[in-house]
Image (cartoon, rainbow, N blue to C red):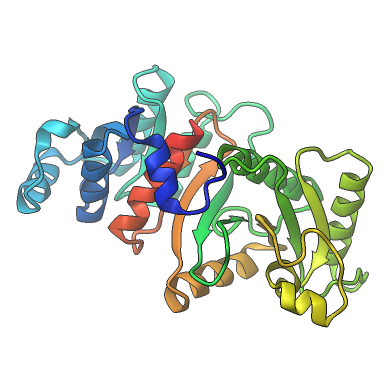
Length: 300
């Protein structure tokens, strides 16, 4: 397989190469359903940490064969996350998934300085891979969920993580659009200055692995027609693989608009820890959770 262009192709890529998955909070219907499907398709060997009686009740109600996963009984939500992280730290699991627990409990367990999964800078960022019916390839987007107002250093790290995921998708030289509301740098808009600096760093080969352009308004980043109409020439314009947003508000609005109004499909993980950490919303569909598991398995 060459460049992966759909979420289904991610699934096909990881089938048969089973990874061990620790699920923090397995007692939710959509979580159990997504894990069961991933196990049946030989993507993962899952261990579910959570209320055992509830997990069994939900699995039986959905007609799920419980032999496909292990269960560790834990009723305390904080300890559920801690015990899932312990499985990864001990080598008993290859990556992590958030189920029916609160995101702060999940993130605290990952970030714990003594017992967590973070080394080095400790920066975690959320990366979403989005398949939009009206776009010609997958979009890799950061950050819709964790870093509220990233500074330049954090944006550079976000770009690096997105570039790594692009490489896992088979994209040798991904094109990254650094997003703002206009395409001309203005000292009245901080995000345009960060974008300009990131482009300059890439041009000086101080950023490697990606072609970078910015600041780019969204229409230029994803529409060749708009780029032509505005006489904007760039290899990134209208052909972005990666979008780095100025803040969590802009990214989150973009993400939710695509999923709800444009029928986009998404896979999402947290990167920056020692292993991929699947992080989806409680409102996300079983299908979204399934493809997020596949993305995590791809990037282990």
